[in-house]
Length: 565
Ligand code: ATP
Ligand code: MG
Image 1 (spheres, rainbow, N blue to C red):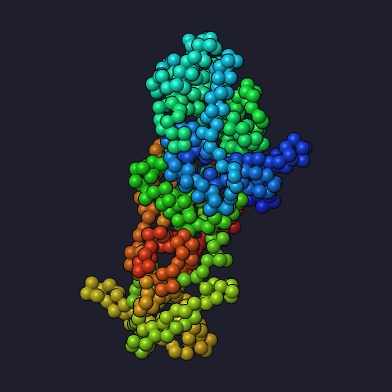
Image 2 (cartoon, rainbow, N blue to C red):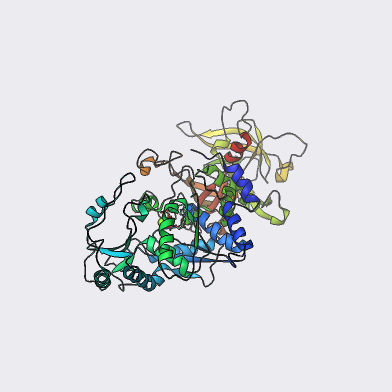
C-alpha cells in the first residue's frame, strides 16, 4: 500500500503548517502557553530509525520555530533491554540530524524517587493496590475487548497493608514477578488501559544509570506522563498508538500532585515502503546476523543512512516532504531517494569510477607517456573548481559501455564507433582482444589528438560520453551496491517480516578502479560517480583500498511517479 496523499501533505509542510503546529500556534496566541516545551523521549533499547527522525524533526523543529525548548529524555524504565551503547548512539544521531538540547538532557530514571513517592500517594488515597495474582491468572482476569475484566481478589486490600507490601517490594524482599502494584481504576472499562494497569513490577536487574539501587521499576505508562509533568512539557507529542493511553495519563495527572499539566497530541507514525520501522524487528536483524550491525547501510537507522552517505539535510527534507498528519499512510521509499538526490545533486563533487573495468588501449598514444587534463568538479558550479585527471595509453572503461554487435540505438563503444571520454579525448574503437574462451578482454582504439578535453575539433557528432580511469595511478576499490532490504512493499503483511528479506540486497564489486583523488574521500560524504550514482566512502576503507557504499542511484523513479499523477 503506497501513499497517495503525499502531495497534499508536501504542500502543507512547505507552508510550514500542519495540525500540530497549528495547535502550538493557537496555544501561544491564546496565552494558554507562554513558552513551548516539547521533548523527544526515546527508550534506549536500540538505534534510532527514520520514524524517530520524524519525531525528532517535529519536536526539536517546533521548539526552534516557536522559540521554545526541546528536551532529550531517555525513557529508561526497562533495564532488561536498555544499554549505555544505545544512549550514546541516540545522542550522536540527534546531534548529527542537526538538533541540540543544551542542558536539557534528562532520564526517566532521574525521577525514580519522585515516581515512587507518587505511587505511595496513590496507595494512601486508595487508588493503587498490591496484587499477588500470578501473571497468567492476571491476564485471564483482564477480559477482552468485548468482555469486561474481573476484579482481583487483592483489590480490596486496605491501604496500610498495600503500603507495607509496596515498601517491602522496594526493599527487595520478594522475587521477580511475585507481586505488582496496580492502579485501582475500572476493570470493566471499555478502554483496556484503564483496567487496573500495572504501575510497578519487581525486577532484580542492574540499571545502566541507577545500578542496583532499585529492585522495582515503574512501567512506561506510569513514568511517561509524570516525567512530562515534572519537566513542564507543554505539548506531549506522540504517535497514535498512544491515543488510547491518554485517558490513563490524564487519570494519573488528576490523581497526583504534579507540578504541571501536559497535554498530549497524537500524529500518525511514519511508515515507508520496503522498510521496517520497529526496533523489535531491527533488533532481530542485528542479533540474528541478517545485517552487519545497526549501522549497516541497508538499515533504515539514522546510523545506517549516515554510513550510506545520506546527508542529514536530505533526511530533514524528506521528513518535511512527508508532513505531519493523523491519517495512517505509507510513504514510497522512492521519495526518500528523491530527497537524497535533490540534496546531493547541487553539492556532490563529481568523480570518475569504473565499477566493472574493461581495458582500453589507445594505440596511437605514445607508450609510457601521460598528460594531465582538467576535470570539472561540478558541471553547474564553476566555484567547485577543477581537478587534474591523468590521460595515458592504458585506460579502464565500463564493461557494459561496450558491445561487439550492438543493436541500432547503442551509441557507446563498438567496433568502428567513436565516443567521447569525458574531459579526455574522442576515441574510435578499432578492434577487440579476446581470450581463448572468446571473452573480450581489451579494446583497441585510436584517439584524435585535436580533441583534447573531449571537444569535437570540427563539430562532428559524437553521441556518447563515457567515464574512464587511467590504469596508471588508478586506485583499487570495493563498491557495495544496496537494494531494498525487503522484497515486498509491506514486509510482514503476511506473516514473519524476516521471511520477506531480500536475499539480493547487497552486491559487492571487488575489482573496481577509481580516480586517485578519491583516496582522500571523507568517510560518509557522498560524491557522484559520473553516470553511476552517488557513493560515499565506508569506514572500512584503507588508503590503498577504498570501500564505497552506493548512497543512491541517479535515476529518479519518484519524479516519474509524481509526473504520472
Ligand atoms: P519502535 O516502534 O520502533 O519500537 P518506539 O516507539 O518503541 O519505536 P521509542 O524509543 O519509544 O520507540 O520512540 C521515541 C519516540 O519516537 C516516541 O515518541 C515515538 O512516538 C516516536 N516514534 C517511534 N517510531 C516512530 C515512527 N515510525 N514515526 C514517528 N514517530 C515515531
Ligand atoms: Mg516505545
